[in-house]
Length: 169
Ligand SMILES: [Zn+2]
Image 1 (tube, protein in one colour):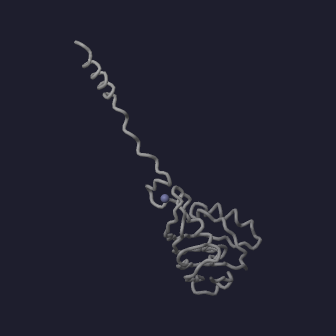
Image 2 (cartoon, rainbow, N blue to C red):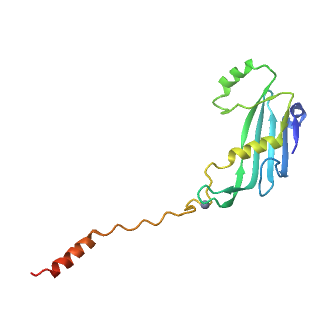
């Protein structure tokens, strides 16, 4: 996947570049290639990144350990702060925009590179479900035996009854 030199974005139309991809990631085993696009907008002191990524991964069910295929379709967005070593501005920006831009955590050097494959990899990893179930009602390897109906109380009454029947009146 592409690696973008961040300053080049400033020369792109609308300071925006869209990268499409359809390939396997070296560090993530998937059944189908990671397919989609990433759009980067250079906003001066930060990058506005949005994407659509789609793939199918094979997961192992937490309950029955069977493998099953899980389709991941994500539309992540992220703001990446571009640092010049001028970190002082960050606080001001955070105060202003924190309500609007929820997580301005990632930082890249403004003269650095945006590695598309790495970012896509991270987004997919974040999207892998923690609780992996082959189906919502998976019973597991040793399904618990169906609860036996409570022994009916009246069975005891029945034996008492038969005992009483055998007693002479
Ligand atoms: Zn299962």
